[in-house]
Image (cartoon, rainbow, N blue to C red; front, side, top):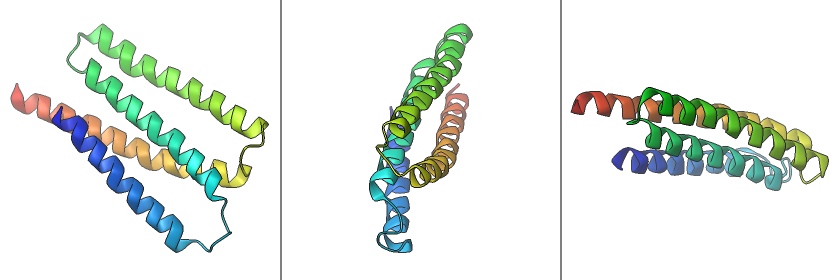
Length: 128
């Protein structure tokens, strides 16, 4: 479980750093914080679910691994698209702030997720 803990620590550190940049780097009132926060929550949940699915499937046979990792990716993408559509159609956010922050967070957090995969694979090879 150590790689999962390391991943969670990295997510927390990255999140704190990003929110510090958002609060200190932007002028008050220039961005709707509610929209940014909602985008952040969606992306963090997506990254966390993706990594947990990977952790579960990494020691399984190839067919199970493929179903969980790539099938999980497809399901997560569909759920994110559905959530984004609901949020935008119901006018729950400022669309520009939400979409831009979602895109930025997604790009950053998917890199962290991939680095977590690589670290887990490296640990698996070292123990074998």
